[in-house]
Length: 339
Image (cartoon, rainbow, N blue to C red; front, side, top):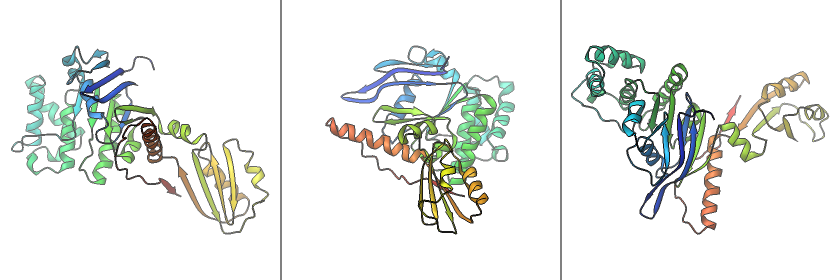
């Protein structure tokens, strides 16, 4: 990766006998949305604080926008917008008044303050609520206002720490869609810290799995799935009206497709293990053979399974090393789609 906008090299933070962050190496490109994924207490927020120059590392360096965050924290703060998991406002002031106040604190010229504040509120979808007192705003509206606080300075990087806590499902979807659209339109780099797996999978280009201060693995979902499952990261089950025999002759034709690794025929269903999503091709094949397709069930190796396996592998390693391991309770579920 050439000229990464975020580069962490051996970043370590020790509190007493505990390593909150342990030898973290990570590079993030400009315009990328990266998800730092891990349970509460994994070290995500400590990493962010070191990147912002708000706490000094015990070892290693954090370069953000080409600036050493430890030696030049003010320069980093000028280029980076940070939204913590809980954003505070003056409740007796309106959304516009709050944002104008933030604009002044950030040195935006007085003649531009109101215009830029209004434009930023419109950008985050608060045009109709800008004159509402923040005491009357919902959690979702306050998160959007918090994002406006971050964006009004026009940063090169934004860091969002658990940004969807307390927002209802429809609000979460809108918020994440806006983040992705913003990143694509403005080439804005986003670091999103979260323990909500499904939300991270929806919006991030790459993810890093962070457990007990260590970055266990990083990459895009497809690459991580491939690493865990060999090459068989897609499974498709076709159900037909007719009963099929294990020696069903057309299987030989399907076996010629390079992306298919295994085929299992059982009763009126056929299961395919593939290296890529061949669902349309397989369904077309069955229809051309005159079979009545009754159902198509596609199972993918999603982020839930990826995280669970890396997390459990880390627990087993710690157990064998005599360490206690993490007691994070995981609400994992099998991710699947029915088409």
